[in-house]
Each structure stands twice: as structure tokens, then as C-alpha cells.
Amino acid sequence: MATLQGMSAMEKTPTKMEPDEVSKPSNGRPQPKLLVSALNFFYGKRQALLDVTIQIPENRITGLIGPSGCGKSTFLRTLNRMYEIVPHARAEGRIELDGQNLMELDAMEVRRRVGMVFQKSNPFPKSIFDNVAFGLRVNRIVRRGELHEAVERSLRRAALWDEVKDSLHDSAYKLSGGQQQRLCIARALAVDPEVLLLDEPCSALDPIATAKIEELLFGLKKLCTVVLVTHNMQQAARVADVTGFFLLGRLIEFNTTEVIFKTPASRQTEDYITGRFG
Amino acid sequence: MSPRLVWRKSVSVMMLSLTGVCALAGVSVLLFILGYLLWYGGKYINWDFVTQLPKPVGETGGGMANAIVGSAKLLLLAALTGVPVGFFGGVYLSEFGGKTFAFLVRYTTDLLNGVPSIVMGIFAYTVVVLPMRHFSTLAGGLALGVMMIPIAVRSTEEFLRAIPTALREGALALGASKWKTIVKVVIPAAAGGIVTGIMLDLARVAGETAPLIFTSFNNRFWSSGWNQPIASLPVMIYTYALGPYDDWHRQAWAAGLILLLLVLAANIVARTVLARRSTAREM
Figure 1 (cartoon, each protein chain N blue to C red):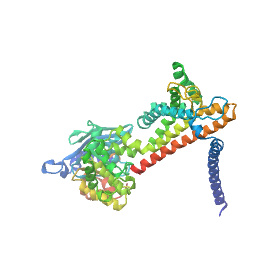
Figure 2 (spheres, each protein chain N blue to C red):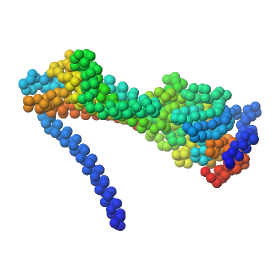
Figure 3 (cartoon, chains in turn orange, green):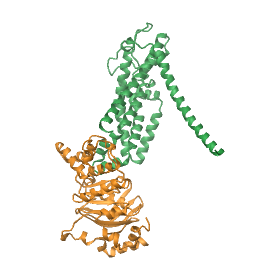
Figure 4 (cartoon, rainbow over the protein chains, first blue to last red):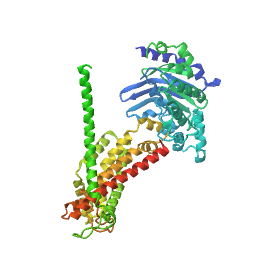
């Protein structure tokens, strides 16, 4: 019943979901990069997302928070259609990437344009160089002579270049956990994605490694639109421009980070961010 | 210490010793066989044995050069037929297999693995030897190749499955196609295990005798072509061990040792190449 109230509140007051700063492109504010409407998601018969509608602003960091199992990772995986590799998973609704229907695009094309960094860093068992070059090679993005330059650029963007420039051909497994995660970010950035999805990228990292990644996220929003799923509310408060709160498969509230953390409209959001549950 | 704790500790020590004893028993059987072969076979291995053809029946001396080359040719054919089918079959089961069909394939390969090798020989005899009207190297290689398939399929599948999904997701999330993901990420990551599995598979069929008796038969001379019968080490061992001459028995021991050494050498070469490749590029 509580969630139903949350839903109806959202439907009645759409302005709360679409904060002024985000929804009005005319005044030079960012356009919605991703437009999701009435998204329902199912794993077999179990429904994981209920009627999610959200506009992800361009060149901003969108934070998604919520307790475990609330659907935020599932939601993230609809944005690059990674859910399709899960058997019996199915999405209903509409997702637009720059006005194009994401479901009608080719999945490989979508994933090239919408990059992803996973919770647990997953470098390939290859050299650092080959990890970053992987996406460039399979997508045939750069010419052979420009490969080295492109790899360097991506590693610089991920703030990893100085640490690895002398060991580019060593195994990626030699890097520390935080470095591996930044390598995965570099690898994702190499193909020049328009959107970068990060699924709890710091959950396995220590505070120093986490701080480095947060710092680099600030720089990344100039290059692309960032969507960050996080377990850590302080992280969302620190880095996100806008924040969405998920609970039991619903998007309860979506607003600027300041509003979400200082004056949330929903009781559930307030309970969650003040630590009363979750 | 309380009696309860003493009991728990002694059970732990007992079980640990039991595993140690069993491991030792397994290894000692292998060492015993190896020692026995070295002792009996080692004495009779000489230059003639590896370079000469068998002497006419009744004369002593001579060698098994033709059988050594024959076994190599048969294994080459076996690898050419069995490895691609086994490897791609394993890739299919691990990466593409639907539920029902994959179950069917898996079940059938396990069943095929249990088929006695002599039945495989009869199968190859029926489909190759009978239509061609004579024994041939091709038939023997094919019989061994078919025997390789089940283990090649299942070991390839197991090693590919052991690769974490996270790696596949990482590649797919970069816009790689499923096939590129498999070829560029999954298979390289599993290459060590896959090659080892296939080498063990080859080693296993290298010693098969029964399927060859019906197919490549035997030959006391150099085989004149892929279409003709050919000598092989296992069939020579079988023939010589059953023969009435002491010299034949000695040569059978020597041939057994040669077969073992060849298999060992192939394994070592494969592992070294693989280890060097992975240290250079990956680890």
C-alpha cells in the first residue's frame, strides 16, 4: 500500500520527477539523454521493475540509490540492453536514447554508445594495453596507427596513465583492485560512449580508491552522461547532480540531489536516507 | 583437553592420513608401471629399434621405426578429425546450447565415451573399411578421431564454463558480438585448460589397440600411402607380446616405453609452449 501511494504521488505531481533544472532544455539546461517511460521488467514471471519513468539528463551524473534488490541494477542493465543475456528476462516500455527507440537499435550498437562498468572489476586476462584496446579493435573504431594514442587518451581520462605508462604490456591482473576498476573505466571510455553506466563501481574498494574514482567521475561528465548506481548514500550525495530513489522495483522519487537529501517529498525516501531502513 | 576434543582431533588426523595413503597408493601404481617399463623396456631401446624395420619372423634384432611413424600419422589424422569436432562441439555446449538439445548432446557424448573401444573399431570397420574393401591408415585415424570426440567436447565445455560470466559481460558491454566475445576473450582465457584436455585426450587414444586392429591393421613394412594398412605401436605391442619369441617380448616392452615417452614428450611440449605464451602475453 505504501508503494502504491508513492506511485500515485508521482503520477499526480510529475514536476517532482522532472526537476526544473533537468526538464527545461530551452534555458540552456541539459537535454534528457535517456528518456524512459513506463518501463516494466520481468525475470520470468517475477516483476523486477514497475512502471519506471525517468529522464536522465545529458552531461550530468545521475545517482540511483535504494536498498539491495530494489531493481536499480536491473534498471541500469535495461539502458544498454545487457539484461538480454539473462534467459527469460524481458522489458516492456519505451527507452529513448537521443530520441531513438533503444529497443529498435542493434544491441551491439547500443552497447558501444552506452558503456558499462561493473560492480566487480572484470579486466580481461590480457595486458593493460589490450584491455583498453579491446573495444577499439572489436568495433574497428581507430586505425592501427592511432591505436596507441587512443589507448593513452583513455587511460588519461581514467586517471590511470601515470601509474601504468611503463607497464602497458603487463597483465591487467597485476594491478590493485582500485586500479583494475579504473582500467575498466578506461576500457569503457575508449570507445567514446555517449552514456556511461556504473553499477556500484566502488563497492569492493577502499576509501582512497573510491575517492579517486569519484574524482574522476566529476571530470567524466563533460565527456558523457553518467548514471551511477550506488549502495552508498554519501557517495550519491557527493557526486550525483540528480538522484533517483528506488524501492521494490519502483522509482519512488527523482529530483536534484540536494532536494532528495534535504527535503525529500516522499516519506519512504526520507526514511531510507535517514537510515530508518535498508 | 576434553574427550570430545580429543575424539574430534583424532578423527581429523585419521581422515587426513587416509587421503594421504590413497594419494600415495595411486601415485605408486603409476610409478611402479613406469619403473617396470623402464626396467624391461629401457634395456632394449637402441638406435636400431627406432630406425629399423622389423626383421622377418624368426630373426632377432630389427626395430619398429614404421610403427613409431605409423602411430604419429594415425594420431595426426585422429587430431585432425576429432579435435575440431570436439572443440567446436564443446564451444557450442558451453556458449550456445539450448536446454533440451544441449542435454541431448551432453548425454550422447557421455554415452559415446562409455562405448568400448572395440565397438568403435567395428564401427570404423563397417563405415570405412568395408566400403573401401581394405584396411587403411585413414580408417584407423578416423576410428581414433571418433574416440577423441567425447572427451574433447566435455573438457572444452567444462573449461569454457569455468570462465566467469563477468568477462563475457565485460566484452559484450563494449559492443563486441557474441562470437567476438567468445573468440577474443572466453577461449583465450580458457586456452590452457582446453589444450591440456586435448593433449590428455590424444594421449589416451595413442594407446588404443582394439580400434586399430579392425582398421589400420598392421604392416611389417613402411606403409605405402594413407590408403594402405599401417603399423602402430599399440598393435605391435599386442602382436609381439602374444608372439612366441623372447626377442618379440623384449621389443614389446621397448615399444611400450617408447609410446609412453612420446605421450609424455607431447604433453611437456604443449604445456611449455602454453606456459611461455601466457607468461609473455598475459600473466
